[in-house]
Image 1 (cartoon, one colour):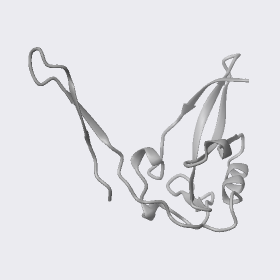
Image 2 (spheres, rainbow, N blue to C red; image 1 turned 30 degrees about the vertical axis):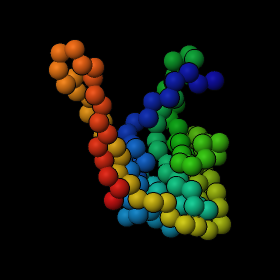
Image 3 (spheres, rainbow, N blue to C red; image 1 turned 45 degrees about the horizontal axis):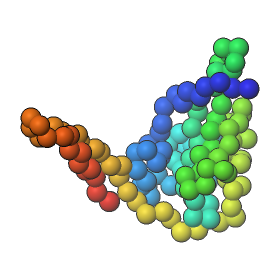
Length: 126
C-alpha cells in the first residue's frame, strides 16, 4: 500500500500548463510520452513519471496515466510500456480535440487599510 505520491515533474503536455493542440500526438510512444498527450474519444490523456513512497519508506517509480476528463479511468503502472499501452487503448479513435486554453493566474492584493483582500483572475483562452 502506498502512502504518498510525489510526481517528479509535469511535462509541457500536462493540463496544469493548459492544453495546446501542438502537444497532441496520434499515439504515445517511448520517444514522445514526456512531451506529448493523446486524445481518445475526446478525452485528453497524458503520462507522467513519479515516485510512490510505501508505508515502509521505500521509493517506487510509477507511471501515471492521467485522463483529464475521466479521473476514474486514470491508473498507475510500474512499467512505462504498460502505461503507454493502456493510454493508447483507451479508445479506438481520437474524437474531437479539447478546446485549447492557458492556465489561469490569480493575483491577490490588499487595496488599502480597512478593505479586505481582492483576488483577480488573469488568463485568456488561446
